[in-house]
Length: 348
Image (cartoon, rainbow, N blue to C red):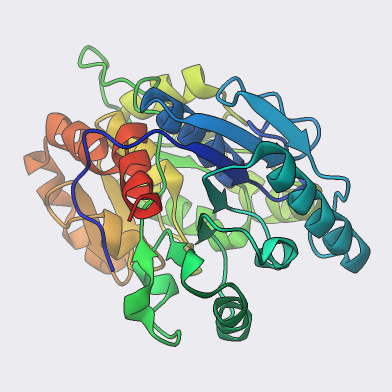
């Protein structure tokens, strides 16, 4: 099931949102899911709902009335799973929420099988047929399953029973600055092979358009960066500027001719595509993961199966409007648009 459109008003609810225990909400640095959770808290509050958060104990989001911490810090550790199941049960008994929106492990829900309200389990990672079927049998009709991309559910049992809701982006912080000259391509993301950074460098060279690379390098990929990427950085045509904050990201994307999403894996949902569109930058992307769901060829970007197809399609960029990109981001990926879709689910 795919929800289209938005609802203007909802009956007020107390909503408990849960996050995996490893990363605080909001994240200090990288943490795409945790950033989405923080923004949904804001979206639910804006509609008049009371929001409660159960997440990493260091979470300090201002978008929740109260925050509870997980005792277990590792979502794949068996002992921590049991500890967190008990914690969810305690928080539910204490807070008495009307609905639960879970972004954490579905196993935690086994501690609240007697909960009477609505539960949404949202997936932002690979989905297990076995685990979700098992959870459906135990929790029954109170459990509804959602994912952030259509491609994630195509091979599952009963894909039509899933609801697809994209991730949101804080479009109020990402503005379209029409005075900015667009002079370069942008790669923005973690520096690792699956993100397509080598492909971005190849595309920049073959198109003869300068490239600015921004993003963090985790410890396991420092050798890859040193040996495979750094030799291509000349400080002129190919630049690397390191991680960027929200203000720096806004400036970078507003100067972008296009954002490159040349991924080499089935990425559940690339939030940075929505961020680029919010800044009026079209997306040039390979047909992997959620790209076909986000990028409309010739309308808000270019899609292709390989670099050759994308290079051939480059002239189409001249007909893509920055305003159209921005409007698309507001319509589909703003906090209000996405939170309204989840609220519609919670009140069905």
